[in-house]
Image (cartoon, rainbow, N blue to C red; front, side, top):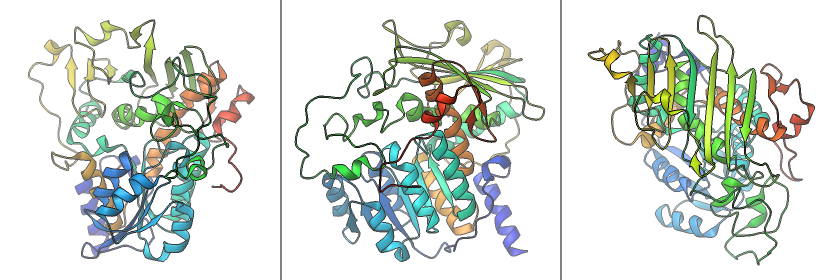
Length: 453
């Protein structure tokens, strides 16, 4: 009775009770830690976003191992956690220190997310992995399968999920305030001005400068095909290169489409089509408008979700202005268009929103609160806290891999549609595109020798 009560209380505290599909991973069976016991964390990727992920993990336990293919961020982080053992290869770290590690954070470039996360889960380690959860759709399905078998606590780093505002927005939509929703628009301010890709860069650089002594280039490449070192890839502009990153869609859809995905209980799309600029095999396109078709879910109607990215004809590629009902378009955001009105979020996380047209919703009262709030402040830290609570309580946090892998798989299919060059029909049961055999190479890439899932 006490175990059931603890689980019930935790579900209420974290908001999972009101959104059953958030806990699709169920209760895990891995050894749990009581709130009085210190967790031992290993952190893979400690520069960039990995810097804050590592420091935040340190709020909740001991950092016993640090791993990065670049000595500069590795050595800087080691100054903050001098007792942690340093590694360049996460495979070696997990093999040597497996018995000393309870949980792992993964904050590497996209192309190594799955390899690191899956190895850690197979060893029974709880995993927090940055968004997008994987580099391609097949990896998302693999990570979902391994997470279910491993029964560990998992969380993807789309920290907006922990924000009080997104939970309020979900309540508005699910209470029917704007009516049934059949149309969604999501847009981003990426990639313009953030990293290099088409049209600025479309081919590999011809220059082959020497590999800096602090960079372990072979480990940066990981499962990706071998290529000469160039600073255009590391440490930041990898996002625009197809072998390493997932473009604007992978970088931001797990944030900006998250609120709509949760509120409407979306799953895998049945069809995806794309309009886009010229495509090259090396870097992501300058702009794209990608349309996803989702089937009805129980009493919820079919949904068409359109993603807008990049710069087209010198202007930001955005939804039609008339959809905003006179509002100024934000640099990134989302629109959920219902039969009674529109919910407009000018925020990457769906954490802020306005009901349109405003005159139709004057005096509208908040719907009943069904999802608990984690409190204001640092939602990124709160999401780590939620993961740690899950480790202690034996449950799953909000953006667990069962949910996050579906969100990631669904959104990354947009990159497949761009490369195939026509509408693709997707079978969510098998993970196959049924009308374009050539899509297989974009659903699952071949790993370099020495790397495996």
